[in-house]
Length: 261
Ligand code: GLP
Image (tube, rainbow, N blue to C red; front, side, top):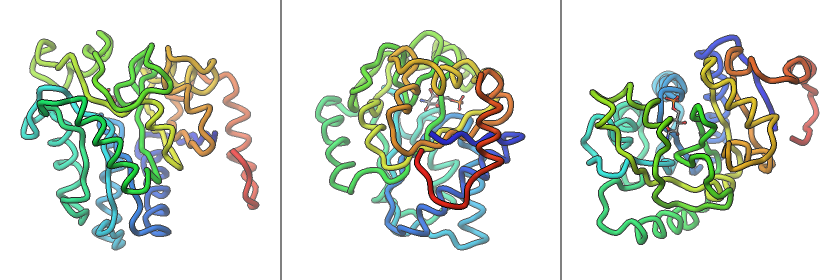
């Protein structure tokens, strides 16, 4: 694992955007795994800027989103379809037919989940997966007790997650209870993973993910098993890490030769 600590939120998103740009520049037809939530917003803003000002080209890129609320139509202002189009896709040149987001309104979820898994494989697998983290340590919507080998499926959201996400809806009763989500096993197959976290509210989840045991009680801890994961954190999100001095030391003394993770 690599842990990069930045002073603030904007800075960590800019550092993460450089990794995304590097992936696309070295492989123009890269497959990106994308996340929603408030955390990647500044990352997407920076990618839009890079597209408009530096010519970052998404014309051959394919994207797979992590998850979607069950029951929300694509046009709903809180659907992840709507979020992705508003905050990224409509500002860049990724072809419409290369965009995959789980359906929240299919009439056959099982078949859809199987197809989604198959489609990821047919496209060559995810080269770079972007993740946020829930306050209970979830990645995508893999709530505590999710199997660390899980695949794309329907999950029942934890009460904590419903409460956390209620801020985006008019009232808490409007937050869907179910979501369709890539599994932890699906996510772990990405070649490189970047997880972004900002703010004190994420500090316990981040401490559990990086320094806790690998446990389904914090599904981000499964990333300890992944060979190429980078955590982009701000000071607040990193504030409960016991080994923070070591991580900052590594960052400061970064060798110029390639090394393992
Ligand atoms: C939702 C999403 C996750 C995201 C999490 C954190 O639960 N399914 O992918 O990481 O929210 O969101 P935020 O970045 O708004 O804190």
